[in-house]
Length: 525
Ligand SMILES: Cc1cc2nc3c(=O)[nH]c(=O)nc-3n(C[C@H](O)[C@H](O)[C@H](O)COP(=O)(O)OP(=O)(O)OC[C@H]3O[C@@H](n4cnc5c(N)ncnc54)[C@H](O)[C@@H]3O)c2cc1C
Ligand code: FES
Image (cartoon, rainbow, N blue to C red; front, side):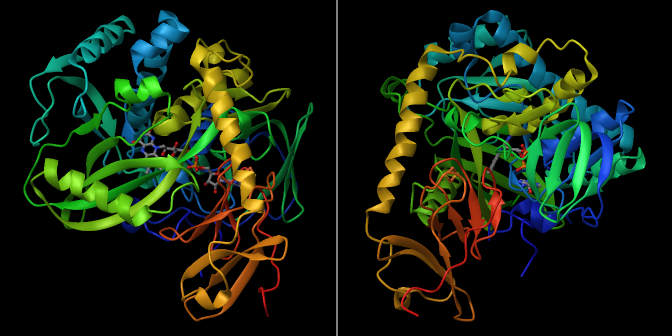
């Protein structure tokens, strides 16, 4: 069995199959530094790197290896074409916010480009064109309005294209975004982690943080009983582990799926994605709906096409196999040059109620900073989070600070409706306390299967390992008490409320929970 946090699901992503993960010894003593960064995904690694470059002493801590979280399970499109449309940003937040959004994502792509060149990081970084196309029935007029908003936001080189090249995608209108980028996220992180160490920063993997106390000197405590005292701490755990309620009531976790298919002939690399919501879905305000995002990558056998989508609220769907099959069918219809399926996996993204990430000082704190609400643009969010938080720590002005401020009042009118809907959804999950279990008894469980069983008034998460041994845990999520559900594809226990996930043996792999599921007796034993 791998160490907890090695990766956040049973399925190995394309990146995990094609790169090692950087790891070090755990923290073994108390220490004092300028900045302690918690979480070694794209946000934490970039923040630690840029802070170390600012001549500050830095400690970067992760409970798994570097890249064991969502950055190891992404598709790593680096785009300034964000998931939400510019026309909406402009309408709800104003032209200046739309411009700052475009500027921050563009700056993140440029920053990655610079880091790769400066440190010669072999991570397949490539500048590529990106194509936004319409789903069936999508409106050409709306896409053209979007193009105008994109230009007003300062992305003047985006243009209308005739078609989506090299595909069978039929779209009445297409937008081409030049100078987007892609890389191998784990190879990138490994290179940046080495650069952090080379510039004097310290990285401790296999070290779980259990509390972060604000103050003139922040105290970061680890599960092994050590303390890092720091002038500033940055919580970059994807879903914050230092905040119990405030931020979690303003964002929601969505699972998203990805597949890789062998490419059978040479094709020019590009990024593709369709518009996230049709006007009809938007009107019904049903939240993020399945959409698709596509790129190429390379392993030692040649190119693969990576296709993502089929999102749903974490823990609230039981048809993961069908979702993977749907992605494959969608890809085969539109990309006639693909062969065998080589990899499939899933992960989750955090969607904020107003569509804007939370990056900056943690609400109510003086010296604790947070990065979350990444949505489908978490790679660029994570990179410019390093730039933004670096400036805040150094006391420098940063034009993006207000837009991404985690304490901002909700910016977008529709956000209130989304806030109410998402929190009503969370409350509805507590019905699990009175429903029957997902299996009747442990004898229903085959090796490799898990299910939540009812045992008197309790819900027990029960897993039969491949050797036939049974493992049982309280199904109550240690964050705020929702009942976890079994994900049969990733073999994880997923909390349907705020995104905590636990491996089959109950070990936490995604915050906000910081502790494992509590072990208990196997029902009926
Ligand atoms: C399938 C998929 C496709 C995606 N596609 C794209 C895309 O094309 N473009 C894009 O921009 N974004 C994309 N995203 C989103 C993006 O990948 C993520 O938002 C981003 O990688 C998150 O980075 P992060 O650093 O915030 O978190 P993570 O990479 O999850 O890192 C957080 C780290 O914190 C550590 N941690 C957690 N709790 C603790 C603790 N208590 N103590 C110590 N360490 C802890 C974890 O081990 C982890 O390593 C995608 C996501 C998925 C799942
Ligand atoms: S993540 Fe909040 S209750 Fe589980």
